[in-house]
Length: 354
Image 1: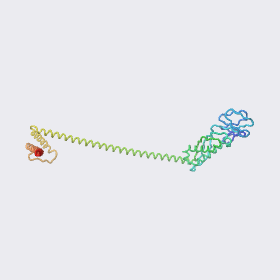
Image 2: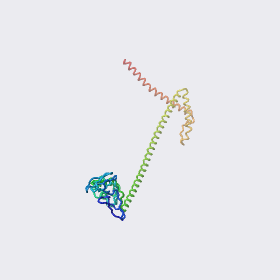
Image 3: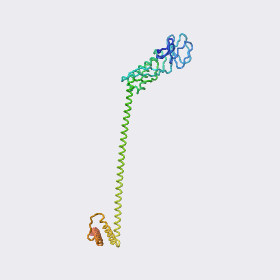
């Protein structure tokens, strides 16, 4: 069965705690961190990490340090035994209401150490019980300032606030709270179900957002690819047209140079002996070739009256050529005469001036 046990020996406090533990009738509850009060003898050996508070005739006298110590029987008496080790206290589970009116069941672990054995002995009746109650009340007040979501996200901040509040109150007790850790936070079943639904909704939302972002990125990549392909295609067409135009221009220049060279050679050939006869032969050959292709290109044929007289056609062509030659020679002469006349005029003018 369960019962509350507070262990005391004589008038000294053996165990500064008040806890509910399962014990059997007739058995002694286990002590956590304090030693039993020693007998009042002359020679005493104090263990390491313990402080013994000595009273002389009912008044505080001194604190015995670890090692060998001497007391006066009957006058001196060891009143309290304090442990200087770090003490771990289980804070019982308690209910608290958050800022959004959600009832929580929360428990924790408290780590503390006694810094001043005098204050721990005479400043408070039961240090461990006082610190435990202070931790519970502080936890309730801190949880009332936070919503349910922030309780899970800001556990470290909540722990530090509880430690700060405990140290402000326990400074007069000679106790220093080192840290406080929340072990478990239990929420009502319905609230847990709603939280689970919220988590699923958040995950579905994230999945939908990620999927839409994936579609958007894919569409952007496809559009970018099409844009790049069109740009490259237009640049290819531009380069092709430039190369084609350059090729045609080079071809025209080559043809013109070839034609000019041919004309130059022809003119030089005509100035040679028997050049006219060679020209007549070339005209006759071209006439025969053109006459043979008249019926191949079209059904309509225009023929001269003297089609069969090749010699007359050649003579006519040569006459045309001769007239063109005479006209060119005449134009050259007309161009040279004014220059000569101009030169003579200049010479006569200079002579007259002289």
